[in-house]
Image (tube, rainbow, N blue to C red; front, side, top):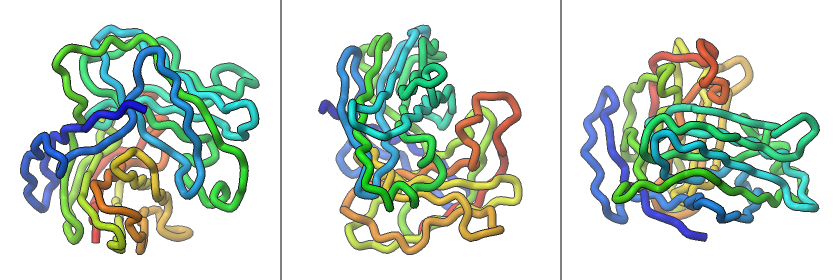
Length: 268
């Protein structure tokens, strides 16, 4: 499976300063890259029930991304197309009524640059506890058509960077309803990641540097709409990427649907 390193273009979060990450191993992510006509076979399980892929495209490209279960799989595919600055462009659960496939069909790219694809299942968007307790076959295939990779255009995403023990405030907007935050960690570090807001019913995803979602939380506890991934032991050394967003982020491409506003965020 071909992979490329990400360059992280860092922005500032209120409450602390950040420096611009350079193109080196210490500031890189290593997500699998979707390439025209190449079908990737993958699977969910072992605590991973969502995964990020990336691709480059050119403004005006009509791009289709498809995800389907393998012959014996019980996965119900769900796809979300994301922008490099936290945009949510399109989602799909069923390509057509009764179909086991998810398909983002002929989406016109609004700009030249990097795009992310979140591949998951309908029942693991907000919580994966039920999936963790099952032993279902969750193999799938995923592929892309229609993207023209621009010359000399590195894979990049732009968002905040911090270290364990830091906190700050960020803003979720209609144009960028997901805030990407990266932090470095070491195997065995125990972290609590929290997002609290008076405006937003928050949701947190935590990915390792290869794009595997290793933790998710919607509500910290019953009746508390703040989200927190509590006392999570990092499984390996590397960079970790957090998605800070509203619980209904996948509806953000529809006008005035998703919550927006200020979020207090911390990695402790």
